[in-house]
Image (cartoon, rainbow, N blue to C red; front, side, top):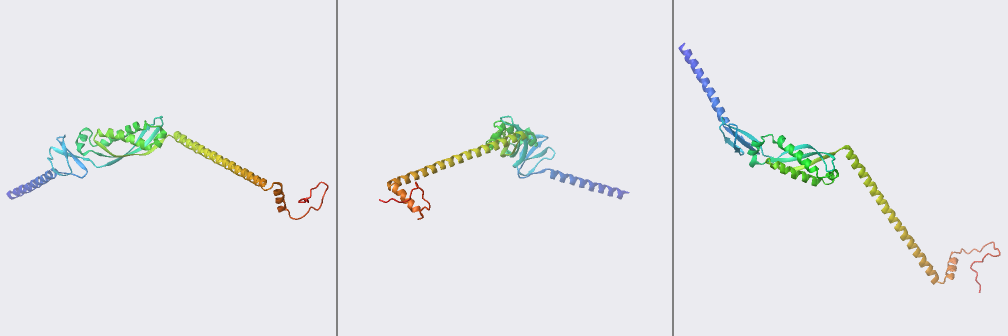
Length: 268
C-alpha cells in the first residue's frame, strides 16, 4: 500500500510538472510578437491604446498587452459610384483607388476608426468625391474632358482621406455609364455632325469643281482670242483660205448649180 501511494504521488508530480512546463512554454511563446514587413503593430494595454510597434520581433506582457496589426502597404479598392452631371444627367462610374495608411499616424487611425477603415471611410469618401467632381461638368464634358474630371475627383478625394491619415497613391475612373436616352441622344448628335461634315465637304468639292470649270473656260477663251489675233496678224482671209486648202482632198464638186461657189478659184 505504501509503495502504491508513493507511485501515485510520483505520477501526479510528473503530470503537474508536465502541465507547468506546457504553461511555461505557452507563456514564453505568448510573450513574443512578430510584426511582418509592410505592417505596424498597434499595442493595446488592458484594452487601451499604448503605442505602435515597428516591423520585427518584440517581447510583450501576454497578460496585459495585445497587438493589432495594421497594413501600411499599398492596397487597391474599386467602388461603383452614382452621381449627377452639371446638366442633371445620371452618371454611373466605376473608380479604382490605390492607397496606403500613413505609417506615422497608424495608431491614431486605429484609435479613431479601427481596422475597418475601408468600409467606414474610403468607400463613402469615394462616393462623395465622385458626386462633387461630376457635378462640375456636363454629361458631354465628362466624356470629352475626362482628364480634368479625374483630376477634380482625385483632388477632392485626397483632401477627404487625408483627414483620416489615408494617402492616395493613384486614382482612375475605369468607366462612365449614362442613361440609354442620353446615349441615344449622343449617337444622334454624332450622326448629325458627321452628316453636316459630309455636306460641308461636298460643298467644298462643288466649289472647287466650279472654280476649275471657270478657270478651264477662261483658258479656252484666252486660247481662242490668241488664235484669232494670230489669224488677223497673218493675213486674215488669205490665212483662212490657206487653212481651207490644207484641208481640201483635191476632188472638185461633181454637180454645179448656178449660184454655187467654185472653191479656191481666184484668177487675176
